[in-house]
Each structure stands twice: as structure tokens, then as C-alpha cells.
Image (cartoon, rainbow, N blue to C red):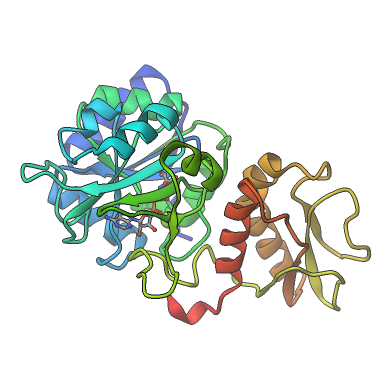
Length: 327
Ligand code: TXA
Ligand code: MG
């Protein structure tokens, strides 16, 4: 955490205008999206993109998503085939990112794509993100607004905790409605590859464009940023817990939380996966912070059904539970 706290402003027209002015000078602004908060900079400016990597301590080989107001705008920079057109038509604006071939005259900084010949593009649907993109008039590079390898922020105060004065301004869009990062699909050769599960489910994508291959399957490289350990709290996380061990905080799900926890957070007492996704990163932050204060030794997570949005939740939990040394 930084000693100085950044400014958090409600998204008035004046705040949007100030954000645009900062972005035009190569500075960084945190903006709300429907998934998580992003750390945004001018995607077309090498200096701004370099500043994003520096602020997050992010490895330079892990490429960034460029955000646009609409698919039409993204088509200036990347090549859309029939699958991309169909996915954009169905799910944009919304929590879906497409990795597509860069055009020869792509305006997005090569630093953002980490030197690859592909570029990730997304059209967010959050009203504040749309207003900022429209006012700025160029694509915004924006990874999640956390330090590299840590839990993504879903509230403005999470961004302040993560980045302190490394961000000039945080636009307050309240808590993120979805709460986990976008689904990432690569459409580069003939294959469609799911690089990261998210709120647009595998089932929905396959209904639109046919079968998906999974990143990480035998012989298929994972995305460059798909490190095994990610989204990590400091306390160790134990998955699929069916009983609570001494000194553990509880990450519960459903109407029958395990008994006896000194500290617990129920992702959804009703067993609702949308509610659980929206609460996930807040829950991990809170159990981690309060658990360390209470000198607990770990977090036990109850099982989450592995279907629909549950797949994305389990993906994040598995990576939060992986050994930290990888990052
Ligand atoms: O919901 C989201 O996607 C949020 C909001 C702010 O839009 N952004 C986000 O960005 O989660 P980030 O950088 O934290 O995650 C983007 C993921 C990374 O795992 C990165 O490796 C992958 O997308 N990615 C980006 N460009 C890629 C490329 N050209 N090829 C393969 N993977 C790519
Ligand atoms: Mg991230």
C-alpha cells in the first residue's frame, strides 16, 4: 500500500474531462468496468503503456487489452473474421475479450501486445467506461488495476489500496456488477481457444461459434499471462474444503456454511453463482486482511459447482490457491 492516497471522484462530466486531460498527457486513470476496475492509459502511446506496466510491476511479456466504444472502432486495429463478428454482435458491449490479429497499421502500441502479432480487444458496457472512451476518442489499454499477481479490484477503495499514488485519478463507478475479469477467447488460426473463463460462459460461446479448445491442454500453450499463481491473497487458500481446520477462516458458499469459523464470508447464502462472482474478490481481500489481523493461518474455501459462471469462479480460486513463487 502506498503512503499517499489517490483522488477518488464521482464520474461527473467535469471528472471525465479531467480524466481525458490526464490521459492526453500520458498519465493513468482507474476506471470502472462491469467486470473489475481497470488501470487505463492511452493505448496508442508507448509512454503511457510503459507507465501501466511500471505501476503494476507487471512483467513486460504479459500483454494488455485495448478497450473500445464499439466493435466498429476495434476493426481499425485488428482483423475480425466471421467468428469474431458473431461474438462481438452477441456479447458486446460486455465481459468478453477477443485476441485477434493486429492490422499492419494497428494504432495500439506494440508494448501493449508484448511484441506479439495479436492484440486483445474488448468493448466494455459500464456506462462510465463508455463515457470515458467516447470523450477520449482513442482506445484505452487497461489491465485490472491491481499490482501484478494480486486480486483484481472491484471497488474504488481496492484500487487505492493496490496502487496508491501510482494512479492519478480513480473514477468511482461503485462496486463492479460482475466482479470477475472478462472471458478471453483467442481467434488466431482455425481454432477458437478459451484463454480465460469468465461471465460469458463457455456454453454461450460454443453456441455462437462451435467448439472451443482450452488453453493449457496438452501441447497448447497457455496465454502469456496465464501464470499458475495469480489473484493471490497472502494467506494460503485450501480448496473444496468439507471441514474446517484449526486456525482457518471460511470462504463459504450456499445455505449450509461449515460451522465453527472465527472469521467467515459467505459468497452467496442462496447458492447463486452471479452473486458469488460479484463478491469473490471482496471476500478474498477481507478474509486475507482480517485473517492476518486475527493471526489465522489460512482460508478454507467450500466447493463451488463447476458449471456456467462457477467455472470462472473455480479458475480464479485455483490460481489464488497455487504456490506464490510463480509470479
Ligand atoms: O475484465 C477484464 O478483462 C479487465 C477489465 C479492466 O477490462 N481487464 C483485465 O486485464 O483483466 P488483465 O490485463 O488483467 O488480463 C488480461 C488477460 C491477461 O491474462 C493477458 O495475458 C491476456 O488477457 N492477454 C492479453 N493480450 C493477449 C494476447 N495478445 N494474447 C494472449 N493473451 C492475451
Ligand atoms: Mg489482471
